[in-house]
Length: 114
Length: 114
Image (tube, rainbow over all chains, first blue to last red; front, side, top):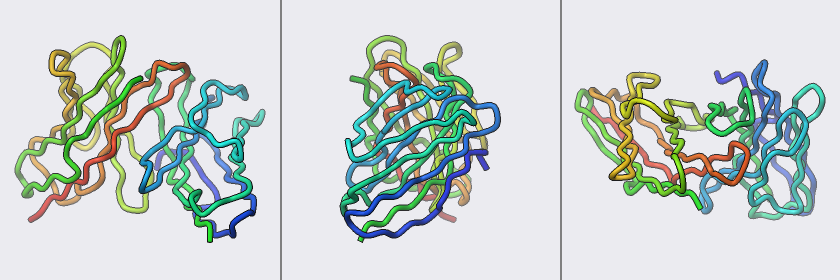
C-alpha cells in the first residue's frame, strides 16, 4: 500500500457526462500528479501540483481540469466524456515537487465511458 | 525530449534463473531514471531509482539496476526470479521540462514460470 488513496476505484458513465476523481496523497506529501494509462497511449502524464499550485502540465485535454486543495487532496475533473477517455487514471504523490523526488502511485480509478 | 525505450514486450524466465528487463534512455543532461512494477489490477509500485552515485542501484524485493552511461542503459536485474515477480515493469525518466514529470516506457511483461 503506497499510502495514496483514490476514489472511486471503478466508474462507468455515459458519453457527454462529467466525472470527478478524487485523490488523497501520502501523509506529508505536498505534490500530487495525475497520469492516464490506456492501451493505445500507455502511461501519460497529465498534470502536477505542488502545495496547491500547478507545477507542470502534460498533454491534458481542455475538457479535463484538476486542482489541489488546501488540505492537499486533489481532484481531476473530466467533462464531455468520450469513449476514448476510458482509461485507468492514476494519482501519485511525492514529498516535494523537485525532479528526482520519488513518486508513489495510488491504485487508480478505472473509468469506462459507454 | 526525454524518452525511454523498453525493447522487449515480454520476457520469459524460469524460476530460480536470473532475470533482466532492458531499458535504454535518451536525455539531455543528467538522467534521473526509475523502475516501477504493476501487478494485475494494481497501481504502480516504486522499485528503485538512479539519481547519482553508484552505477549499481539496489531496490525493493531483491531487484537492482545497472546504470551504464556509455550505453545509455538502465537494465533491471534480479539474481533469482520468483513466480511472484510476474508483472508488468516500467522504466521511466525524469522529464527536464519542469516539475517532476516522468516519461514512461511502454512496459515489459515479465513471466516467470516454474
